Image (cartoon, rainbow, N blue to C red; front, side, top):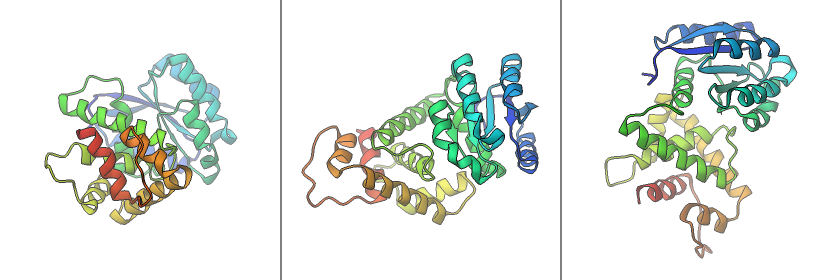
Amino acid sequence: MLRNKNLKIITAIEDVNYLKKVAGNISQINEASVIASSKYSTDIIDLCRVLSPDILICDLSAENGSMTTTIREICKEHKCSVKIIATASSKSGEAHISDSIDSGADIFMENLDNPSVLRSSLQIVSRHGRELSPQDKSESIAAQKADDILHSLKLPIYHSGYVFLKRAITYNALRTSKLPMESYKIYEKISTEFDTTSRHVERAINSAVAFICKHSDKDDILFSILGYSVKSSSFSLTARELILMISEQFRL
């Protein structure tokens, strides 16, 4: 269930079929509704100004990628009060993922035509800046810490495994048991949340860890996580080890 009632959403999606599926999924969520829709940048800016939505779903494929400029203008004018979910209705939009995040989008998510992915995306962005329960505050703090460390490890937010790895770290950090969660249980939990397979989650997380290892020195990785240097001549990094190292630092 979403923590906030009556989320007002504006959609800026070019592909008609994708728009229908996304809007149809939102209509099935009691706590959210689409209040306006347009595929044109100028319309979106005016609609946000007049209607003050909670969330904007922005298609990076629209208007040949110029939606990144729209995102920047909306963030500047509304000072981040409008949460922005970037998506792509076609492959052409994926070339603008990095620019959209740099311009101020809160998250990039594919497959918003999948009801579970859409709901999870709304949950993620709607929590920002809201009054949270103690449990939600703990989760929000853990998620923010995970963000900080993943950024320091040079993993871009638009990487396919970013959200999954962040969730895996958060789940393990907030566990009630003294023993760490088994990897397969974490992957199952995430796959259920995003309505995908455990294998897909595992591949995406492994890809994210491989990216980190490729773009960071091992000593830099350990320093980012632990805060001090460690001799690592025999150090090898797996997804499980990375998740455990980061989550245990949070618990300490």
